[in-house]
Amino acid sequence: MITSLQRAYYAFLLIGGIAWALDLFLHLGFSLIEAEWLGPYLGVATAAAFLDTPYGKRPRAVDVIPGLIAIAAWCWLGLNYGAWLIDYEGFTPDKYIPGMLAIALMIEGLRKSCGLSISLLVWALIGYGLLGNALPPPWQADRLSLEALTVYLYTDTNAIPGLVLVIIASLVLAFVVFGKLMETSGATAFFTNLAMALMGKRRGGPAKVAVIASSMMGSISGSPVGNIMSTGFVTIPMMKRTGFQAREAAAIEAVSSTGGLIAPPVMGATAFLMAEFLQISYVEVVKAALLPAIFFYVCVFLQVDAIARRAGLEGLPAADLPRVWPTLKAGWIFIVPFAVLIYLLFWAGKSPQVAALSSAAVLMVLAVLRGRFRNRADWVDLVLGGGKSMVPLVMIAGGAGAVIGIMNVTGLGQSLAFVLVQAGTNLGLFVMLLITAALSIVLGMGMPATAIYVVLASVIAPPLTEMGMTAMAAHMFIFYFGVLSFLTPPVAVSSYVAAGIASANMWQTSWSGLRLATVAFLLPFVWAYDSALLLDGSGLAIVIVCCTTLSAVFLIAQGLGVAGRGARAFAYRAIAYALAAVVGTAPIWSGEETLWALGLAAAGGVAAYLLREPPGVTAAGAAQPRAEDARG
Image 1 (cartoon, rainbow, N blue to C red):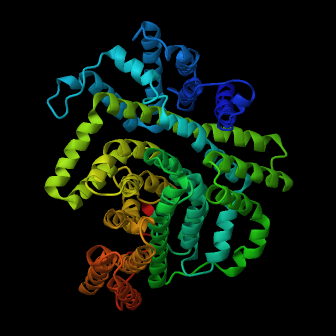
Image 2 (cartoon, helix red, strand yellow):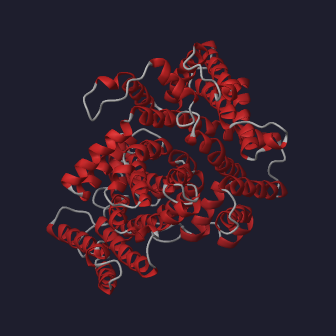
């Protein structure tokens, strides 16, 4: 049950955030420095986190009082920040005492809203900041007192009230508003119905519906778990009814929804952070992410088709499916705002927050004209739901700011970069990429995507660029592998949630998901050596890498669609994977602009066609009885 205090917190986070993003305070005559707003904003988010996850079954005084203290401590920063900018008295009690309270309560709120792993990381780094001077080189940190470290994290714009919090409280908030408005207006049902109308009657139709609907909604929402919970309750039962195993259905939904984090335009809010880290435009990040996301979903779609074809799974009866044109006629109000968003971002050159909020305003008008938002319940759902969605994001921003601040003030970032560069120099770039991928997955387990990226971008990206990778390729590399932690055991948050809906075994679901997401593990290694895959290169180089990658994707999909332990199955898989490796890496070893690579791409396409139906070999989904894993 949501308390009145929670409602007030959520309303402040959403409505106040919109006012800040649109500079309404300035128009009303209130000139605020960023930290003067971000302090109170973070304090309210901390208080909301305490009430969202109370210590007991329901919020009590033990949850309310720490939240009020957090608001007071962070408001103290806002009230005094202007004076502290010209204050040379140093680390005085009026700074470090409220700072200690604010930071400690923020980390506890971070634990409550985002889990133990990220909060433990922040505490560990604080411990390093205080005690790291006792370590030997290269890990030795500069000597810092508790007061100095506290004041730095509390007040410096290179720490908590810094870049990440600025982005979350403005850019990301705008897209949260747009996504929540889409959801409240019925966009989830529209995308699902449209996907059903397009693909429902085809072979394995419900699984293809899951891939398309989850990719469309996931590219806007940017939340794998939220996407699974919205589309999965429709697509997973449909897949099971038409013959997919429970673990298959859960894995397809988990992989498709997680793919929304790597799919433009939102990319789980990471696109905005990446643009700021790289000091480039948001549009450039979206362009770089486009081709890998397309190839990822193409491979998932092809694997689903291979499983359905070889297992003899049919689609849904046409009479039970919605029709395309009536669906578009009923849901065109969701297409227009999305088109407006794309136009404002890519052609009109508007800032992301202006584009997102303008598109949300268009959707609001259209929704009202169609009969939505004419009652109090719709508005309450929008405001409270949107405000609640901001709580973990703001807490992540605070924790990420602390991580970045400690990396900077202690020199830990430079130390880690030195060690990784030495490893890369001694072992080679490929080995360093393998180490980086493993670190990205391990550090990302149990952490939200935004936090994953911030930590990895601060620690791992610089050594990759020093080894010769482009900055975009390095940041996209760590981002992809951080996202893949959502599918990688033992945590596998996406697989766990989807398995719960499907009543499937979580471990079986995770391993099935890894098979479906294989291409996502391989693509980063391609662009690490050939950044044309990120649209960074000549026109000919981009065409060649698209052809070779698409051909390799077809081959991988065919190989992954084969099951069985016999010699024939092994031979088909081995041939498909070997050809995929040769074709996919052709631009790397033969030259980015050589026509040999195009020839190999054509040969790979022919081979993929010939391998599409191996005689005597079953599909990956048909190797075991259909109901076997429903007991999980």
